[in-house]
Image (cartoon, rainbow, N blue to C red; front, side, top):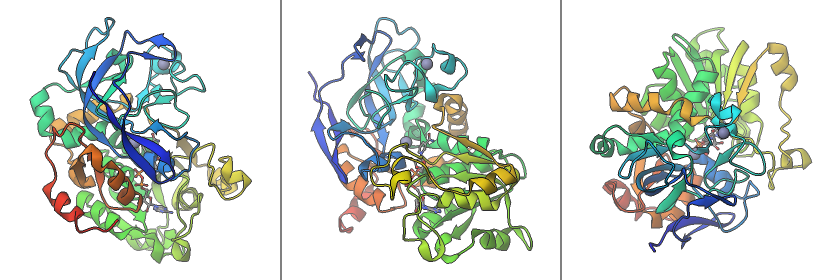
Length: 412
Ligand SMILES: NC(=O)c1ccc[n+]([C@@H]2O[C@H](COP(=O)([O-])OP(=O)(O)OC[C@H]3O[C@@H](n4cnc5c(N)ncnc54)[C@H](O)[C@@H]3O)[C@@H](O)[C@H]2O)c1
Ligand SMILES: [Zn+2]
Ligand SMILES: [Zn+2]
């Protein structure tokens, strides 16, 4: 039986590569006749993994990580009809049955049949069911006909694999943030956070027709990257005690609010102005409440966990952020939150990639590395490196030579 090396969480800021054994076609005491085994081509590290990596969730040690998976089908169960061995596929990070009332309404983020604890499943994630993480060599994907997005031509897919690898989560997540924030032709948009999700939200906002997109962060490298990659405006939030002042400088005198607000940070936000180095879990929400116009929409794709072992105080530990709810209510703002239902958007965004409408990998500065380099990549991504790391467990993608030489120069 083949080995299956995977990224395994051992405790805060400690991940290792271990053989976890070849995946079985079973889960939750059931035989998975509708599943496939994938040889993983590309599996990305996500800001969502960082919540677990930092010990800000209750995920137990020895759990496997990874939910952004692209692969080749090497085995299939007897009930898989329309997916074949050799297909190159993207795996939405939501595990979904395709048969429950939520899946039937495209709310695959809250499938009721894939997690004994609550609606909603994902690979390798705290509280999201028993599914093996995808930062590995092989993984089992259940309900394959429903879940998998097959790329039309495997050779063309390999040519654009770094872009297509972003369809399992981060591109649809940014797009969902923009759609739910009401972005359309001529919109002005503020995006809190210039990580990969913030970049995806900026790319998506332009795809949807936004006139002016403003991205805020205190990480100047990331702001430079998103500006070059998308042509957006940027705000270094360390330089402003009031983010509306920065909005006014960009949109013009007296215009201190945008039409649409997107939270691409979540509960691990820092403050702004003189507090930019400090944790402030409600900074993104408070900023969006301030800078989004009355009756505007907020696309809150940044994660807020119900349990945060390191939260400051009882409320923070129990996922109860104390933000400006009264002002939000008074302004009539609309909140849209939760995990993105990837399957609602991934096919359209695949076409946008295949027909050269977007260069999402370039905008994010994707960087391909081997599985064994994952502990290093977690470390530098956690420190805010302006990259999106793609792990290449079978060395089938092209290595980014610039990164390899750079790596030797970076002290860890
Ligand atoms: N809803 C979903 O389905 C979904 C899917 C993927 C990721 N996410 C979440 O989206 C969020 C972003 O993901 P990512 O991969 O870009 O993470 P990331 O950690 O790489 O990026 C977050 C960025 O926010 C910046 N930041 C912190 N405080 C800030 C503030 N007050 N104002 C502006 N910027 C600030 C950080 O400097 C960092 O660059 C995470 O919470 C992640 O878990 C949600
Ligand atoms: Zn992710
Ligand atoms: Zn379902």
